[in-house]
Length: 291
Image (cartoon, rainbow, N blue to C red; front, side, top):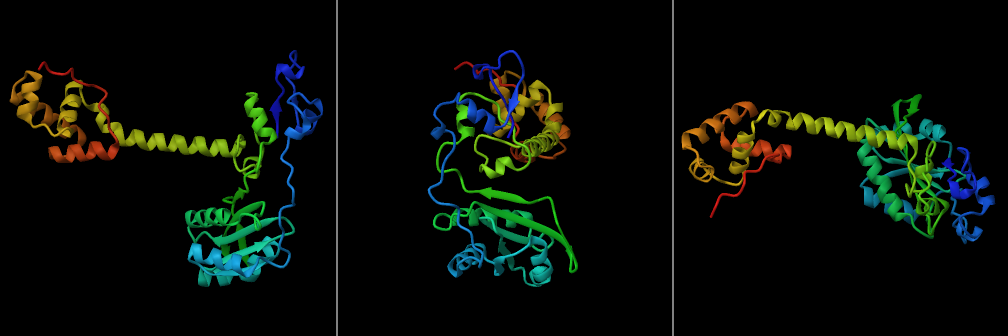
């Protein structure tokens, strides 16, 4: 974890960066007991596998069977159970020397969205006394004898039970930048890793691009056509629009014909439906007519 030390830390004349250990020794954010959340008990580990009731509950809430349930190497357990998973769709659940609940699934057998949802459910389920430090989604691809774990891994950490250094840094408005999976390890609380930030920005750009494509036809409408389309959305007919706008019905119908052509539809109902699907909001509003 890297952060810039602010002026109040005593380094106002130069840009200084440090690690949490060095910052801790400076003691500028208060008493040391406030820096980190100290656990009363270590995270539980399961060298002989998880209790039967834990596995049964996971199978019940996800709707799939479970195989494995032991401490194992991630690659070794795929060699052992990968083909069984492909044939049955059962989750491969395993752990390690660390406090982790790992769920492996082939991306061609189980959609990533389903794997992530299953791990979300496991995270909600695995609370004390079985509050493992992390639930890990372990997607893989390939075929028997040539399994490959993908980069779509996702870690779900147990949220810190109390304030952490990151919370204190946020309170002091100190920027935090994570490297690697730091945000996962802190359950995403008050920190984003560079990779996560880039992923979110990429998703935002893609969303905006899709939104732009949906709204592109509406950008060709004139101010008057936008007003007429909004009137149609509000359920007004041509006669009422003409009366409220102080124009002829023929003029209104001309605007409707033009906007239908620009939107590529052949009826007023289709134009209204297209606007609603695209989430279109008129950028132009006609002043209220006098009463």
